[in-house]
Amino acid sequence: MARTADRPAQEALLSRAVWDVLAHQGLERLTIRAVAAAAGCTTGLVMHRFPNRRALLLHARRLLHERTRARVEALEAASATPREALRSVLRQGLSLDDELRTESTVWLGFLAAAVADDELIVQHRANNQAWRQRITRLVGAAAPDWPAEHAAATASALIALVEGAAALGSGDPAGYPPAAQERMLDDTLAAFGLAQ
Image 1: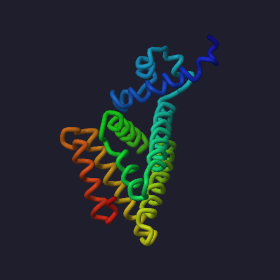
Image 2: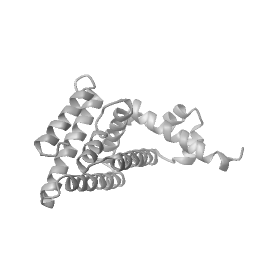
Image 3: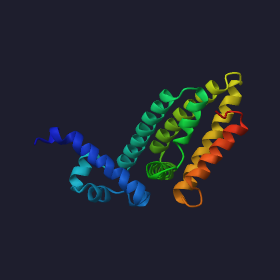
């Protein structure tokens, strides 16, 4: 089969391998060689798609953003009310199952790498800004009488809660089990007057 015909399958395979290495082996082990081993291919094939470690990290962050964006758009569209949409979208950011725990771990790995890298931090901040805008819009829809500044501050607090709980839950699932994370979210929404 021609290489061009294999390209989508190769990209999917390499994407899964990048994700797997970052999520299960950690940031420090994300290398061309580790991705090749996870994909069961040569380092040459990996380098054809990802010439260096930064390219691997950028790809992992883009993949995370695309996955979560598609999921939150579907959750928002399926929600009957603005408050249901807000809770559903925030809930998917928690570390509630293996998939979400893996995503949280990948996000934390990317953040760690981005701290000292100007190119990576720009992408990280752009994606976080899009997330803040989405949550601020959902808070505004759930509480239409609130001033914009109050909706934005509430959105930031809700994001901090969800991302903190997800990070803690991904590192210590027994200490921050899914039920406890959901309870934190629901109690916080209720405290803000945003319960369903």
